[in-house]
Image (cartoon, rainbow, N blue to C red):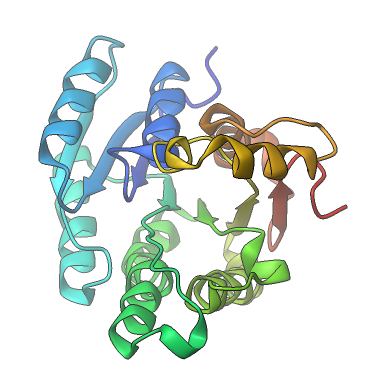
Length: 248
């Protein structure tokens, strides 16, 4: 039997990068999927069509996870369309890197809104459904930058560090209701964004990783699959690094 058969997941930011990898993996494991996107309409439509061939129910939703009202509407729409859900993956995120002295307020606030506030918006809206079902798994996509910090990414680090603390607090609040909340903190993962890095900098990154390779979106998706499955029923409140040993 597939790991996620008879389950339904909501995945924010699911049209590209890590989110797209999670959508594909969950579909392969028999999960019905509702995924949101903000601007990449063509990528979302292409992914939706591709996944339908795997025999699971999938639907895309254009939704701004950083907007409280839109987050609530997304949850309500998924309940109406799918009859409920079992897993919430808060994956929506952006970067707007710059040194603090050069960073404007808009860049600071935008990253916090999309990366951190979206976790609050969707989690708060989803909790009623999880309480009704008396179970649920919330998976927040964080970053090792939220643990160690990184020069030129104070906004991103703050947002991901906030996600880590939020994750632990929600796990403590909801554990007695059989609702789990964990975060995944990826390190250097190959995506469309990292493909733009020049070879010298890419080699420097890889040489600093004990496993001497970048991670893949499939690596992250596999961990998401485990945390969404019943095999992880005794795991909550954890920030799990997936970084090839970089922060060891």
